[in-house]
Image (cartoon, rainbow, N blue to C red; front, top):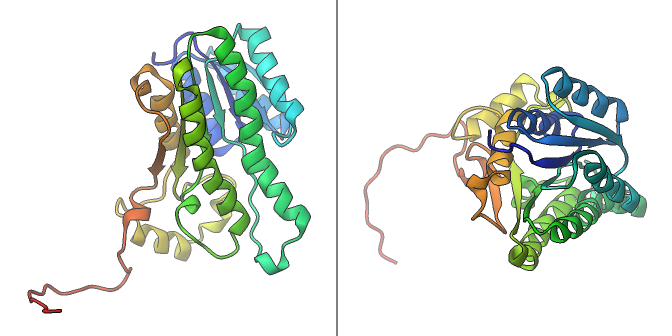
Amino acid sequence: MKLEKKVAIVTGGGSGIGRATCLRFSEEGASLVVVDQNAGAAEKVVGEIRAAGGAAHALGGDVSAPETNRRMVAEAVSRFGGLDILVNNAAAVLQREVVDMSDEEWDRMIRVDLYGPFYGSREAARQMVSQGRGGRILHTSSLLALQSRSLQAAYSAAKAGLIGFTRSLAIELGRHAITVNCVLPGHIRTPLTEPMFTPPIQKAFEDRIPLGQLGRPEWIAGVFTFLASDDGRYVTGEAITADGGFTISGELPGVEFGPTSQEVSK
């Protein structure tokens, strides 16, 4: 098992990518603190883990609050003896044009999507440094950190900021054998995104994705598992895109270019 005897915290662990990551980490031998704003969802995931023979504890809380982040690290230490892995996965999403966005809406997005990972990383790093055995800090960013889309200014700003934060923190913590990386998922089918993927929209995305299909939460969990394990020990400061090739594709769905051969003088 890749994560045997490791202790991990996953925020936003009650559904989607967070849930899949919790289940995969447990399968690989880790003990889990499952954090979610929806305490009931966190408890349900913990029930799944325990039913399969794993060890886990649920914690309800808002990651934009420093106290939630202090509590989750304290719970990991008190219940499981330390902390080896943090996955900052919790996120808020807002679709709003900037001209219509309130100060409160902007602030909420930045607090959850950027302050949350800052608070969590700070508390986790303090614990990991004190333990002296290294560790892994992982973030869920987004392909919208790289691509622009209307109505997503606040979300894109926070997720792009998370890449810069990842790189700087990786430099600071490298001497402590703590790696810091972020994963940029593409279009993933989760309970949150499912209503968006009507048949026409799903087809439009899949026509643009070189691998030809939307992603699944467990595929992103696999990337996190690699980065959290010893296999990923020499990877740090990276923003790893897992999107089926969506961001590299310049294809125009429905447009076919015939073969040509010519030389152009400029």
